[in-house]
Length: 198
Length: 429
Image (cartoon, rainbow over all chains, first blue to last red; front, side, top):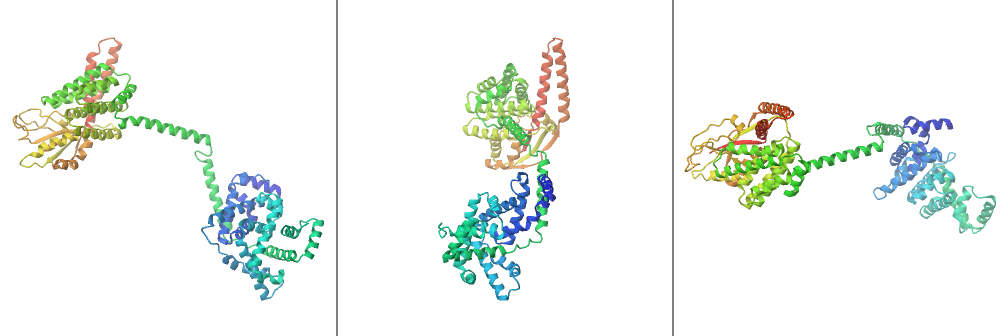
């Protein structure tokens, strides 16, 4: 999408044109949905909150001044929506991890490199399950950092913009989040990773 | 550099290739010699890789369509708000709200005095004084004096009902046309019944309320007020009775407030049956009951004999009452007794009668007689007289005859208006 075209769509979207807004943001649907999914560990909730993200974006696009890129702006809304949602359901709902693990079995299978044998597939599957399990147990802010950095591969600068925090803070938060994830996995699921990390 | 102490930070920066060359070399040297940091690096690197390799899952099938619908809905709603009647114009909304509040306040202010909230005669009188500034004090006195005379007539039972009515009308005229400069009216009323302070207070209260109403609505209220006032004065002999009247007055006032002038005028007439035992004690009970209810007993036009009273004659209430009496025992041979009372009271007569151990039953429904035409004729006459008075004034001639004529017509009109809220009830014994 050229800058000119993006500006034109942005102008129309600010005037309430749904089609322009969709054209502008539809390429980020999947990314936003996956951020929500990893944060919430439930695809239904993720779908709902991802939609909420785009609805909020549509409502407040007038206030978007272009200080950051559109995806960064969308990810910021998504992270806030997810954190709000988690805060709301904290004492109401027990989040199920199993559902997503099952849903993603096929994807995980496809990740296995170069025709691995059935044992290897099972092993990697168990490791990914362990990571998701650990992720759900993590502090929400640390989880968000892992989702943004390690799952979505966003740069420190992008994360800094999304979180509206200095890059230095982002650095320390990333290191802290990875440390927490590692501790969780090594304490509880050490047996799964022994061959790889020791 | 203490890499062990800050290993998490260095490992993270190393994995993300954010260490400068010098730091990276030093860190790698440290890793080679430190097994603990080396393990940490391997673990962190492996977990980060696992996360990175985790592929995105696909969007739910209906995600885009569902979102599209929701966006359209929001877009439509927003445009409705934007281009609606009020839009986002905050100034307009503020202005409109202020105007609405002001209008409601004024409306409430106008309604308040009619609700009889205050019982303070003086304050009510002062209120009235502010409203009715163009009234003629002399009319008040004449009107009031007529009221007094009619009361006396009623008290001695010598006067006819028509006398009572006429004087009531006169007082109505006094208060309608002009007449009620507040403090004067209040003091006049006080002087007429100085013996009973409580009743006097009620008297003033009632007068003021209806005068106020008359400044806004039709003058019909005044007749009712005066008739009722007469009744209150003549029958208030005990504290209990006066309390009851106070309640009745409130009830009556309420009906006035809610009344709507439809510009149609009716007189009402109904018949009831009273179950009478051989001891005829119920008749006395009826009298007490009706007295308590604030009804006016219509006096016989003739002492000995029967006067037929048609429905039409209710227009001239209360001129006739068909009672066969003898001077010695006026009730012994009575066929019926007639009362003149507010419609609102009539509606509760049957239910309240049992308290006085009397049994009233409906003989006829309420019969309405349309007197609008008669009212219109009289009203036209009054308008004509007004014109004539104007002309006479222009000619600088004496208008007293015309004024008297106008007064008479106005009295008649008020009688007709009053019929709307009143009913003549014939109770057969």
